[in-house]
Length: 167
Image 1 (cartoon, rainbow, N blue to C red):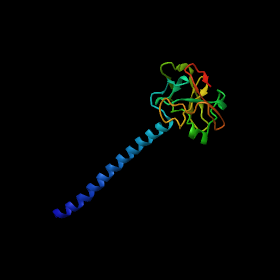
Image 2: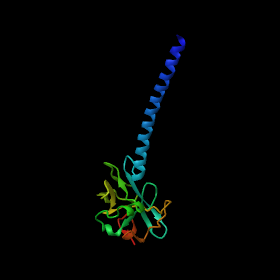
Image 3: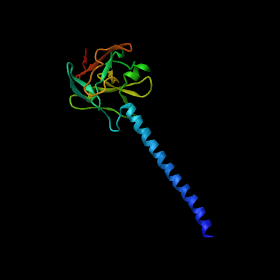
Image 4: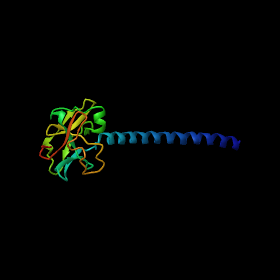
């Protein structure tokens, strides 16, 4: 009789442990999905921080939380997001998470931070009315290889903490 009990208990224990593993996997997937979403949008829970950094030949320019240079797109005309689709894959807009706001640090004025609707969904952080973007070719903090480029339908420029577009 003991042998039958052991045979029944072992498969039951395996099922219980498998169920526990399944719950853990779901939790990890949810966490990973949330982290991936935050990484895609460049957002943090508290607020999207924008500060400034001196870039050789340009002076003080706006940078994101990672120190990457922020750009404005001339066709936006200080009024709306126009870089979409393939353009946005090269020049990702600085997207805000749900209910999130921009936070200015140092010389960056929080009063000049705002948001515009993104035609692809959500909101894009603006500064002095200009939607802000990063450039995928800027692989390190302090790089501004997109400055003055005429690609994807218009010119790209950095912006100063005073809100002046630097050409």
